[in-house]
Each structure stands twice: as structure tokens, then as C-alpha cells.
Image (cartoon, rainbow, N blue to C red):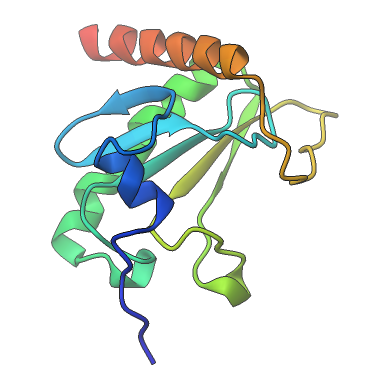
Length: 146
């Protein structure tokens, strides 16, 4: 049984500019912004502009271009945070751990010996998120200008 996409979800509201975010990247395909409850320093979300509840709902012709943006943002997150690695997560439906029902990909910078923080519901300091967004956006512009 498929559940319909809800255009009132928080990420749809962010896409429409109804809710602010710390933007890292935006084009006609995707928007990347800082997770307000980061599990790692530099935790970034990438969402498609195509309305899709989850991975299985995304039209095939839109999925490829979206994943190219995920890859591009992931490279910039890794460079900007000087991470040793990345954890890239995507959850589908409640049973799969999804909380916001708009397709989104988590990009989490990782360092050896540093565990992910638990998801406590605690919001991060906006100035810290703003600084990470600026660093990642700068890394993105460096990689595209090469």
C-alpha cells in the first residue's frame, strides 16, 4: 500500500521558503542545507525538488540527476570538514527510520574514533550551522570552478 506525498511536510515548506534553513546548495534539481539536529559536525541534508515521499516514489528520470547532486554535496562536505570518511543515510517509511516524509539524504562527516551523536531532538546553535553552511558552500564553489 502506497501512502500519498504530503505537500505540507517540513521539507516541502523549506523548499517553498516558508521555513528558513541554512542553505549549502540549490539548483533546479535539489536543495542542500544543514540538519538542525546534527549527529556530526557538518551534518547536511540533500532533498530533491521533485515531490517524492521516499526513494521508491522518486521518478526514475529524476533520481539520477538528484543523486549526482548528493555526490557533489558529499564531496564538498568531506572537503570542508576535513572528514576522514562519510556516512550517507537514506531512510524509507516509519519502519525504516524515516521521520520526515520527503525524500532526503543525510551526509554525515566521520572521523576515526568519533561516534555519531545520538538523535536527542536538541537543536544546534544557529550560528554554528551558519558557519558550517558557509564552509561547505565555499568548498562547493571551489570544486565547480576547477
